[in-house]
Image 1 (tube, rainbow, N blue to C red):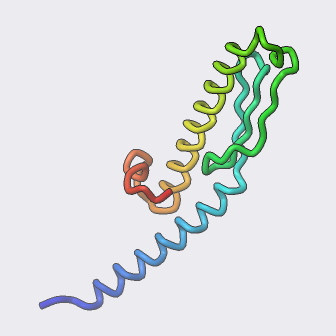
Image 2 (image 1 turned 180 degrees about the vertical axis):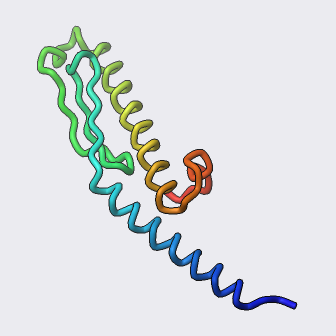
Length: 110
């Protein structure tokens, strides 16, 4: 025979996890991740969800001869800020769900 008390408790836990995940998403929107590459020549700031909020480029890189260096630094900075935001997301979701970080990366919640 099915125990509806267990189902009710499971539904309550699921709702709690959902609320915690929504709270984590809001916190991630307010998180700031700053990455500097090239000795600080390029700086990228993103929120915890990986949205780039700001980009600073040293003026010495803004000439035609430095274009390849600038391009490489921008790619490196954007990739690094993206990776860091994924780590922040995994940590927040782990906290919200109680799952280990490596498990919370799965499921496409973000």
